[in-house]
Each structure stands twice: as C-alpha cells, then as structure tokens.
Amino acid sequence: MLQSRSYQKVYSAPVRIFMYTKPFLDYTLPAGFSVITLEDENDCKKINDCLWKGFDHGDQPDDDLDSRLLMQSGPHFRKDLTTIIKAPNGEYACYTGMWFNKKNNYAYLESLATDPKYRRVGLATIALTQGMKKTKELGALFCFGGEPDFYTGIGFETICYRELWKKEW
Image 1: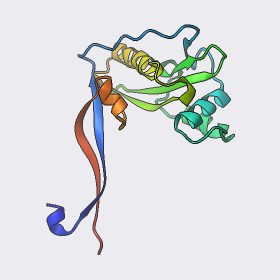
Image 2 (image 1 turned 180 degrees about the vertical axis):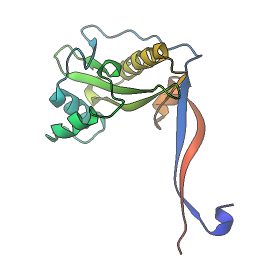
Image 3 (image 1 turned 30 degrees about the vertical axis):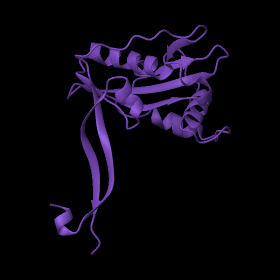
Image 4 (image 1 turned 90 degrees about the vertical axis):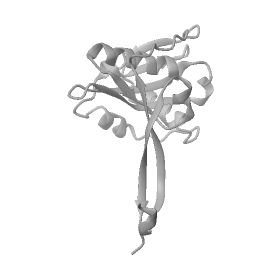
C-alpha cells in the first residue's frame, strides 16, 4: 500500500524476542572470569572502555564517563539487573544492561557489548542469560533482543520488522 502511494522503504530491522517458556542456554564461564553486577562494582571507566571497544569504535575509548552515569539514571534502571563479566586481569570483558517493564511483564536489553579480545567464548550469552533469568524471576514473560544474528543463534525469534518509510513531496 505504501509503495503504491510513492513511499520508499528507508529502513527495516527485525524485532526479536526470547520467550521465557524456552530453556535458557547453559554455558560455562571460562576459567578466571567472574560474573558481577553494578551492585558489586560500578567502574564507569571500565564500562566505557568495554562498550567503546565492544561496539567497535576503536582501541582508544573517549573519556565521556558522564554518558555512562546518565545511562544509569533512567527511571527503570536497576544495578542488580546489569551483568558484567570481569576478565582475570580486572577488565570488564562483557557488559549487559537489562531492564524490566513491570507493567507489561517483559524485559529488554540495553546494551550488550563484548570487548573484541574476549569474543567467541560465550561471554555475551552468559551475561545475557544471567539478566534474562533475573527478569524471569521478576515476572517477565520474554525479552527483547537486538538485530545481529547472534540473537537468533541463541534462541531469539523474529516476530516482526520495524520499518521507516519516506515520501518525497
């Protein structure tokens, strides 16, 4: 219908969820790594470094630590739902923010990043699963995930597409 009215699709991205009726994946944490929350330790520099590198912005993170503090000031932000995997050397290897919508009983992930030097050993799956287990205990029925194929590889399903259409007038 939109195409017939001269609209052009500008953007399309999958909306993916993991239903909590499914079993969670069971990965083993590599030796020397540990799972913590922001209640255990909240080092904004380490968070920034992990997210900067994890989102492939380069090897030299900026020093915008205020944005990391702002991220933690959201009305539904909870330190206990954030999962960090700490490397043996003390670096944050993986960071997963998890949010819970109590009114509608769902969880959503924001954000998930793994430092490239720690990828491909299951850290993101472990961190994400920890957060999903916590929100399931709180009453969530499912979790919204991201676009990359990583999510479908661990059991997320595409339920629809988010699209942007534009018309030149």
